[in-house]
Length: 473
Image (cartoon, rainbow, N blue to C red; front, side, top):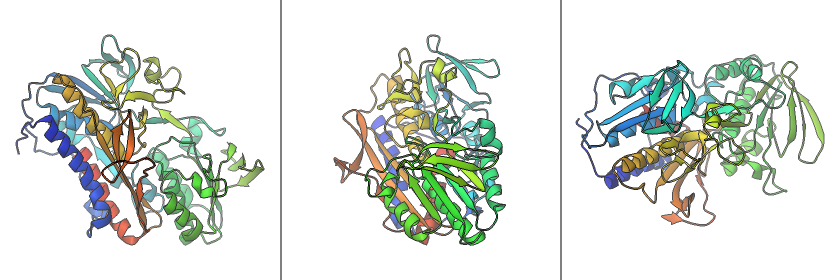
């Protein structure tokens, strides 16, 4: 089908309607897609015919995950045939972080979570460059790549994701070989799954949760639930999952008030469904992990020093925008401009960096600091807002003054049950705020499912396939 040019207002409406359709799936779907029906992310022989919009320019997108792929795709769909679009990404396959916790209990395989960039090339005429960024020249509007080549840009969209800090006495080598964080899906996910499988009956699993912000707010609690469920069914009821959360409770008498997302769901999960297995400890400090002995020491929120011997340790370390460490390419370019230098601060209307001299550079996804959660669905939304803003700017217009972003996710609680969380964010007063009842309401919060159910678990695959299809199809 030929892609026809449509006015910006119409495109924005479709963007939001598409996002809202995923939310609409949450409480009402009565059918599911099984793992065997997973969306095929390989190349397609059917190319689109983008419209001739009159827009021209070199668009370079860095990062082949949820944000980068979506941005490249929608720059073509909305910007038309006159744009030259290049995606820079060293990996040939993107492994979805979404659903990757299900690999730990055998419900999913890593292969089922793999997506290629074939459609970007064959359907959307996006040039794919297999390299990583080593430097940005903001004045010359040029990036340098790991293969020594250079690319000029008119607009640069950075979606590099995150990198993980050395923490708790551990190094990057420890994460890769002995104490995997598995917070980037891939080989560490398989390593952690293998370690779980070889745990003795009745043994102890310790995991840590860093202070917010971190990627996927409900993800650590979801992982604790799935590990607890797996240990109960495979390793005996004497098994323990100790969760050391560095976040402080907002209510001193309710430890579960430290939970960063889906507090109702995970309070129910920890205190009822997985009671006696999950030991949730918020507000801990001074965590130290011996990667050889798996002995974990810390101070609890009452100031008492504790030590626990574990059979498997899963630290989720603090993380930051990729390239933002001292000497990193994002840092050297002056783009890691948050207070702590970990994130890229952006203009939320366009996701253009607010750093000095960074005109034409946009940062989306987990690497940005924009007030939205760091999650795959939000990355998809940020990419569309950014692409729409770039197309407007190329056409001599201003970005949409009132963008809207949608967030939705499912959280499996056992091998057969799940919950969900959804929110709509509206831009108002210089920030994205949760909308409630058709507009922004003070104190509005994301909406949780009122139950943990098998129906939610069944619908989870449909949500996942819809979201991944929108980004990679």
